[in-house]
Amino acid sequence: MLTDKAQIGANGERLAVEYLAGRGFRIAHTNWRKGRYELDIVAERDGVVHFVEVKCRKDHGLTTPEEAITPAKFAALTRAAEAYMEEHHVDGEVQFDLVAVEHLGRRWTVRYIPNAMQSHW
Image (cartoon, rainbow, N blue to C red; front, side, top):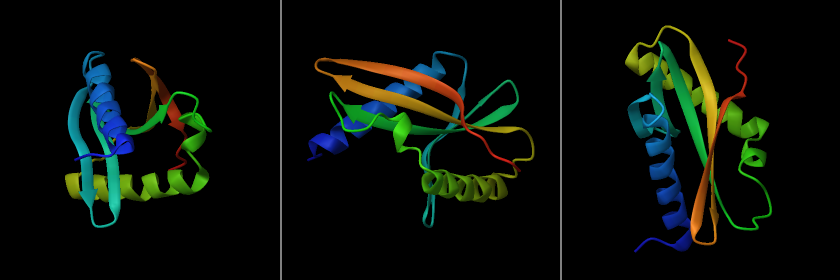
């Protein structure tokens, strides 16, 4: 049985995938893992590989989903993206995006923030 937090996270990731797929993204992987590395969504559109972090929040949370992307979190995402690129032989343009999902009472809101994190590779 999933906890309330886990259920919100699972619903948020499902909504994020639906949102991206509905906007022309090809979903390559969800919940990709290798060792200690993890990526929520890896998608492709127009020749660009998008590493998409999904952050979910309940109504009246202490922080917004956008505030959850700290420098330490981005460093971990960067290492995971490097591992993914090596494993899948990705050699091209990449982008780090955020999908912010909020559970507001009985409804959900989904916001896509492209280039939410800038890599300097």
